[in-house]
Amino acid sequence: MSQYIEFATNHWMLVVAFAVVAGLLLVNIFGQSLQSFKSASPTEATLLINREDALVLDVREDNEYKTGHIVNSVHIPLGRFKDRLSELDKYKGKPIVVACRSGHRSGQACSLLKKGGHENIYNLRGGVMAWESANLPLQKK
Image (cartoon, rainbow, N blue to C red; front, side, top):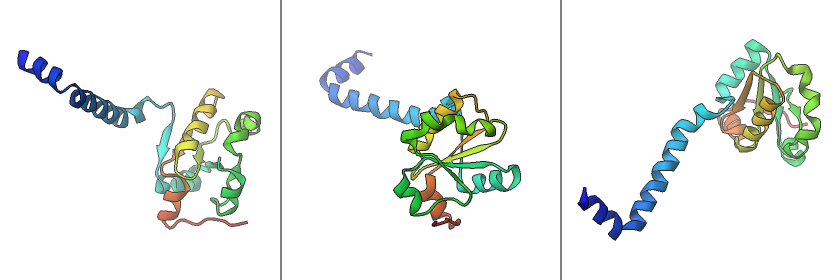
């Protein structure tokens, strides 16, 4: 045991770096289970849309949305999301797939939806970029 303490004392920067990497690894592994919403791959999202009539909610900015969006998606930019959250009250019993460019902003929107009383929420894993990579259609209107 004394050798471990001596090693940690002599190589404290290495020990701190290891602790940080181990912590980040644990957050990556267990972080998904700590979220109050689920994530869905593009294929799973397609099944939700086709079989359960899920609403697709796009939270990207206007210029991103115009470059291409999932067909029949509702567009509410994340910057105005809190102000427009009441518009989604009519979808409370329906599954909602939230999308952004890469999946980060949509996670924030999912948390806000959960706080707003929505239950069946899915974050599109990888966002619209993953949707495009899966060769799924985008509407450009």
